[in-house]
Length: 361
Image 1 (tube, rainbow, N blue to C red):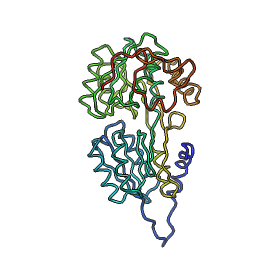
Image 2 (image 1 turned 120 degrees about the vertical axis):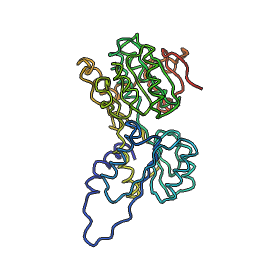
Image 3 (image 1 turned 30 degrees about the horizontal axis):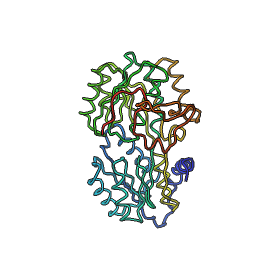
Image 4 (image 1 turned 30 degrees about the vertical axis):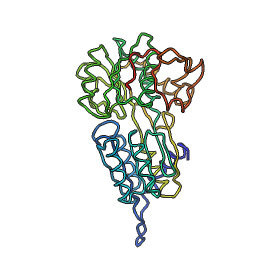
């Protein structure tokens, strides 16, 4: 099932789910839907948006579903225990929403072949395990264009979580976007080895500001960096959710993950028996990724440029990774006019030329 079909499913589900049950009719068994979160529901970022997807499922299906969520689950053995408990409790489909849940999800899935599993941001699948993700790099390129135009110091700070391809491609895309409009721009990167730790994120933001950064990116989940940017009178890009409430002056824009339609479509597929293991990777075109409105202080010409870049990416006219492009060490990885493949993107483990520093081991 392709993404367009999934979204069509989602569009009609609300009407189907709200049909009244005839008097005296036997109520069908509720579908049990489980969610495993790496952070707290109130992180105002990654997990918050996944939970909005859960709420969308409840709204769409009403009393036809029973949802469960477990938050603050550490990646590794703890996640395997939680996933197994949900399977033992009779959940029909379980969504595991962090990269480090991939192998634990596969292990549990092998023990519960009748349960459907959906893993977010991973790349390993099996007969009863699907994967799904968002092309975050598309939004980061657009935001990079805005940041490259708005920086006055020509130094952009980036708070990074873990050196996995998803995070690395985001850094590279943001840099390429900024570099496309500002040849003098530099990126400073701090790796914090966590998805959600407001204290570490705030410390990283302070360190980047002390190094001259006047625009902050993040691939972490709390609004700590946005708050710091607001306090220091600089700019920032919201992550996963619209973080404007924490930085009304600071937030230039935000990259917003829209999981609801996907979750509704996949729950519907379980209900009607059409569910099959698959991989979904949607971006700006599909609506799985949206970009929040730009701050009023962003000049009109920059807003127009960002809108054009966004439209060109959504239409396929522009790919953020189009050659000629070199790796940090100077070796060519994309020839002139060549676009990177999804396979190469999914395995990206290097900085592009121009980014300083080295990846953590």
